[in-house]
Length: 272
Image (cartoon, rainbow, N blue to C red):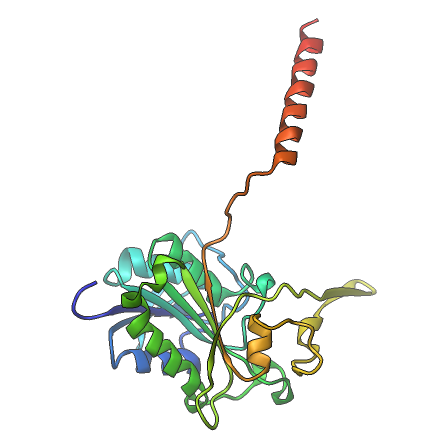
């Protein structure tokens, strides 16, 4: 890392969202910032990639007609200097639990960076249910103050502290700013999963019941999880690594041996 911190900023809400403007503005006070973000909302695209994308200059940086993962690849390989850190966010709406790790475009951008061996921070803000649907919530830059504060702090300190020697990226979830700064808790993703589907004629409605309530008195997520921390008003930081790790499994090894025996028998039958 040089004398000046280089940060690539992206998101999945689109380059014109209040969240990316708030985060990039805060980071610009401590780093050289290059913004490469989707032209339009690309929420829930995970790590989807395109073969070809258009790019146009924008007042914040570059707007890419593609996904967050496209933006990271384009930013790291072509559009900007090689950064010390990638920051994705701030997303409007929390990204909590194991099941969102492959679904969220915000986290998808951080994972893409981690595969490039570039540390990353994915920052998302929980929008209380009583404010209505997340995609309709009217949020100003001032409401991202909690997110910008902790993201900027981590950008300034996590690299030198050696955090990314043990994590590929950080999944950070914050409450909406208000009152005193929220405390931080180091967490792990909740395993809770409550998707459901109901058919209505030729239509199937998919519902995520995880968000039916975030009341800490009734949610089943245990202490130490990201959902529990955010429900109780704390900032959740989960240090994570890119997925697809492989574990040795003796039962699977025995199945592979059984398949080899079956294959040998089939070959013998064919040769007869």
